[in-house]
Image 1 (cartoon, one colour):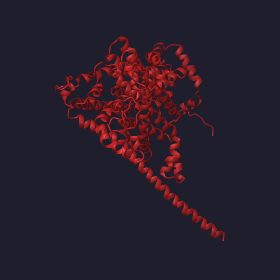
Image 2 (tube, helix red, strand yellow):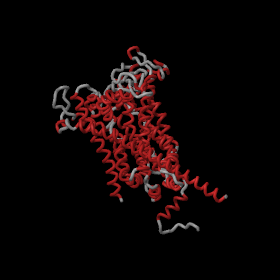
Image 3 (spheres, chains in turn red, brown):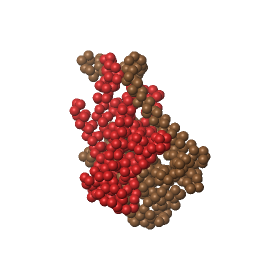
Image 4 (cartoon, helix red, strand yellow):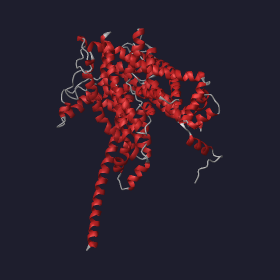
Amino acid sequence: MSLLLAASRRELVRTAARRSLGRRHLIGRVFQGLCVVAAIAAVAPLAALIYYTVSRGVGMLSLSFLTHAPTPPFIPGGGISTAITGTAEIVGLAIVLAIPTSLLAALFLFERSGKLAGALRFSADVLTGVPSIIIGIFAYAVLVLPLHQFGTLAAAFALAVLMLPIMIRADEEAMRTIALDLWEAGIALGARRGRVARSVVLRGALPDLVTGNLLAIARAVGETAPLLFTLATPFAAMTLLIYTDGTQAFGAAQKTAWATALVLLAFVLLLSVAARVAAWRISRRAH
Amino acid sequence: MIYEPSPAGPDAVSGFVGAGRSAGVRAALLRRRSRFGDGAYGALRWTGAGLFGAVVLGLLIAIASDSSLAFQHSGLGFVWSGTWNPAADQYGAGILVVGTLITTGVAMVLMVPIGLGTAIFLSELAPRWIAGPLATLIGLLAAVPSIVVGLWGLLVLTPIFANQVEPFLASVPFFGWLFRGEAYGPSILLASAVLAVMTLPTMVALSRTAFAAVPVADREAAMALGATRWQVVRRAVFPAARAGVSAAVTLSVGRALGESIAVAMVIGNRPAIPESLTTPGATLGSAIVNQFAEASPGIGTSSIIALGAVLLLLTVAVNAGGQALLRRGSGAHPGTAGALR
């Protein structure tokens, strides 16, 4: 009698388990399907964005478009050469300002621990998330307003401030990949700390330093908002040109905007790819 | 068995030293070195740190002092007062704050489920040959400049929203009231869609890092207990990665709050309380972009900078929270978060 009861109870549990497994599999399938849908929904607009920029921009693109200065509206033959050289000048100057400063500040954070280093690290983390438009206002307040002059210097300062926290944290992160033992070994050998920083820390971290800095530069190249407050003419940078031409109602200006956007996009993506390739190449040579 | 460091193996030796290393010894070593020699290098390092500190302080002081005129003129009520009428010298950020919060909120409603689903797909479901390239692609797309997204939103999405998306949404039963009114194209909804596209790569990259930090053993244990894949994700992976995912959402919110140029291109720039999501609106960032050129020197410019001060407070609060969460969720590195954006 009790044997029979146990058997029927086992049967009950078994069917319940089977039913639960079926239900759990069904829920699992639905969830997996939803995740695939989400992945497609994520890639689709990004792919559409690239597709439209290429297809609408490529028609206008030519060598003379890249090498000629802009012409007044409705006069054909204009190009974006001033915007390209302008962006190059601004970003170049910003790099000269930001890279040495960020590298030294990162070494400071790497070698020191304590309240000051902690506070600086925290400010860098928070400053990375500060909207670029506020950095533009900052450059406007400290350079443009007192000097009564818009221009490359103020724009470069703004982009340098934008890159500084990104570079500091990326540099420090790169230095942390170096084993602390190596650093201590250098010190124990009696080498000065400057020497250890140069020969051990910077050399060892080089691949990651290159990657981090190139990504920061790629971000600065594509910024518009800080330039809005620091440049007087839209022809002085690619992003500003896209903004002013893109928001105009006539077709020729919009075409110029698309073509400029394509040039900018190509340049920025090239920088990001270069960042990854550089890291890979350098790390391969080192080992 | 007693552990004996082998004299021959450098790994064993450094392991032994590592085990006995005390922070105090290191600190003493450091102090000693900094007191004797290393003068030039020490000074250089201090210069780097000092310059950065000066930039941070300078930013705070400049924004505070240049916005002080506006706060004197309008009082603290500037932050919540609803009128923005430069012609009458009336300035208030209230409506713009509301516009910023609504736009960001709708963007997150659109983006977070998609971003989370994509991150789960990439880290838990997809085979490696799909996950690798797809993650690289989305990482590259994080580098797309916001102005390009704005241009696409303005010239491609605006007509689609005006002619198809907005009329369709207005006809949906029960939710139609959210989208009522004339469909112009430029609207809060369009701005949110653009923000969703812009924040998606950050969300995917950061939450994927959080999922990747969950030990494989946790997943295997759940599977051994008979969990399906969904149950593994829900019961084992997600709880362990919760802090990292919250950080991803928070940092995306921070980015969406502060984005100005792309939003200014598609939101329609009407500083008034919106009747529905399909009407034009304005955010703090878009108002700064649009009003800055026409601002009268003095009180007008100062009020624009005061809008920046409000935006700065908002984003710093959100980002400080995000960074704290990121530190709690061990997997993601705050340093790379910045580089990814």
